[in-house]
Amino acid sequence: MKPRVKDKYFILLAAVLWSTAGLGVKLLSWNAFSISCVRGMLCALVLLAIRFKDGNRTAPSLNRYNILAGLFMFATSSLYVLSIKLTTAANAIVLQYIAPIAVLLYNILMKQRKPTRADIALTAVVFGGCVLTFAGQLERGGMLGNALALLSGFMFAGQIIVNNKRQTNQQDGLLIGCALSFVVYLPFVFFDAGFTLTPVNIMAGLFLGLVQYGIANLCFARGIRTTDAVTASLLLTIEPVLSPVWVMLTIREVPAGYAIAGFICVIAAVTAHNIYPLIRFGKNGNTS
Image 1 (cartoon, rainbow, N blue to C red):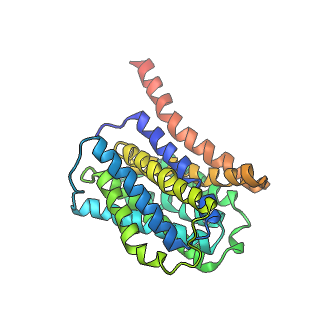
Image 2 (cartoon, rainbow, N blue to C red):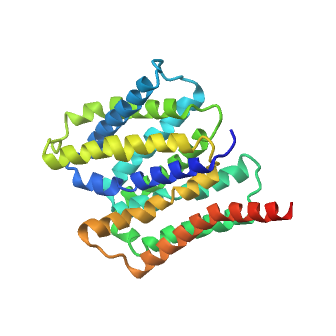
C-alpha cells in the first residue's frame, strides 16, 4: 500500500493518547488485571460500534496474522499495565521504548534489510533521549516491574511489525486483542478487593478504555497500514516524552535537566525523520 503522509498523524495521535496511560492507571484503585479487563471490554465496544456503523457485521478473520496481532496487543497491554503497578510510570514507559531498537534489529536480522545511516542515527538519538528523560529514576522502581516493562517493549515491537504486514487486518487484530484481555482477566475482577465504582474510578476507567485505549488503537490501526515499521516506532516515541508532561501539568512536577534534554532529543529526532524526506524530495524536484 502506498505510504500516505496523513497516516503518520494518526500514529502521532495514537502516541499522544497512549501517553496518558500512566496517570490513568495510577488513579485507579483496581489491580492490573481488572484494569486490563475493563479497558479491553470498553475498547472492544468502541471497535464493534465502528464496525456496525460501517455496515460490517462479520466476525474477525482468524488468520494467523490477525491472531498474532491480537496476541501481541494483549501481551503488550497486559505487561505494560502490570509494570506500571509494580514500578514507576516513568520506568514502565522508558523501558517499553526498547521497541524502536527491536524493530530495527528485526529488519536487519530477519528481513536482510540494510538500515540507512539516518535510521541508525535517529534510532540511537531517540533511545538516548528516552534514557536521558528518565535518567536517575530506574533504580527507584522494582526489578520485577522493570523487567516486565522491558518485555512489554519487545511485545510492542512485535505488534508494530505484524500490523505493518499487508496480510494483517488491523481492526480484526485489535478486536481479538481486546477480547482476549476481557475474557482472560474477567475472573480476576471478582477477587479484586480494590474494585470499587467510585467517581474517580469510573471516570478514569471510562477514559482509559474508550479514549486512551479504544480511540488510540483505532488511530494506530489506521496509521500503521501505510507507515513503515521503523518510522512508526520512531513516531510513537512521542509517548514517553509526553507522559511526564501530563504529570507536570497535573501535579506541577517540573522535569529535571536530564529530562528536558531527553525531550529535545526525541522531538528533534522525530521532526528530522519526517522533514528529511520532504527536503530530499524538494531537492529532487528542483533538479528535474
